[in-house]
Image (cartoon, rainbow, N blue to C red; front, side, top):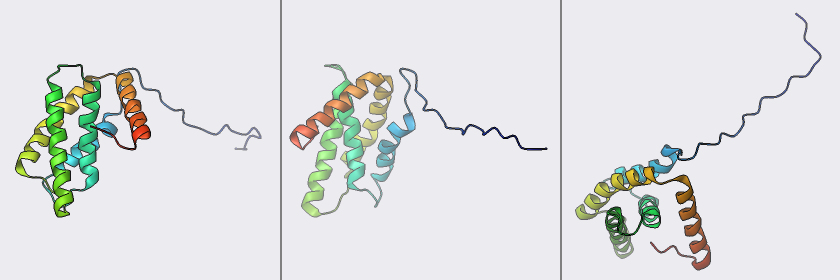
Length: 141
């Protein structure tokens, strides 16, 4: 069988555009769940605390005023703040029982709420957080 002289067009995968309301849940939820698992272990790091804080911050930015999830997100923020203050004081990151309970009870509720939020709202909230960080150099949660 002889080869043809016509060159073949190289295959290039096209970027997939997700329909409105769908997102890659693994990329969005996995850091928070990994941080929740790391809470009771020795390999808890600052990044894990930041992942939990970012989930709580996203809820605080997207939830309507007076929604019950806001109290859960605020409890998560306070628990993360306690972990960070203790880490500055003693030099090692660790979570106490109350903080672990607040974070492990709050994260599934927060992720369930974030699944209901539209992609446009999440994009707006993320852009607002980036603008705030660029303006102040700090993100207030």
